[in-house]
Length: 269
Image (cartoon, rainbow, N blue to C red; front, side):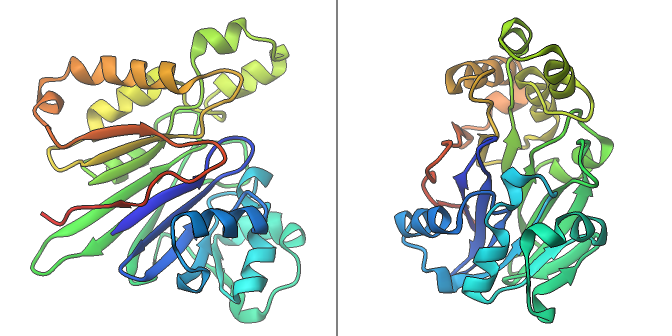
C-alpha cells in the first residue's frame, strides 16, 4: 500500500492512497490543474485514480472535486449529508459518479472505514484504510484531519495503524499570542476546531504501535505553527514513551503545504 499528501493546510488538502497501480484521492481541495501537476511530480498517471473520497464539505477539501471527477470520469464517495452540503459546489455529474457511503466500503481494491471527527461542518470523517495481506495480516493507514478533539472513534480506528496522516494544526502559544481575531482563536481551539500539536502528541502515544512505520503531520496552520515546532512537540512526547522508543523503524515527517511529499510504500511484514 502506498500514500502521499498532495497538498496540506487551509489553502487546500488532498491525499493519494493506493496499491500497485490503483489509487484514489482523499479530498481534492486544490484546483484540478494543481492536483494533476502534483500527481505528475510523483509519476502517478491520472488514469490510475479510481475515485475521490470527501471527508467534509469545507472548500479546502472540495475545491477541485467536481472538475477532477468530470475530467477523469471517476466517482465521488461521501455521506448523504455531505452530498447535501456540497452538491451545488461540485456541479453537474453523471448519476454513477455520485456515490453515497456510510461506514464501510471499498475503492481501488482497498477496504475503507469512515469514522466521525469533531469539526464545525455538517459532518466530518476520518478514514481507516486497509489492505488485506496473504494469510490473516493487514496493512492499515489512518487519516484524521479537521477535528477539535480526540474522540473514542479516533482511538479505535487509529490505534496501531502501520501509517498515520494526522492533524497537527497549531501551537497553542502561537495561536493565542498571534494576530487572529478572538472569535477565530476560539473557533480553532474549540472541540469543533482543529487539533493542537500537544493534543496530537497525546493521541499518538495511544495510537503508535510496534508495527507503525510512518507518521505524517498534516494540516499545519501557516500562521499559528511551523514544521519545526510541530515536530519538536511530537518528538518530545514520543521520546518519553519507552515502547515507542523501541520502534526503530518509525519515521516522522511534516506534509508540505503546496507540493507532494514522496510516495511512501508501506513494508509488508
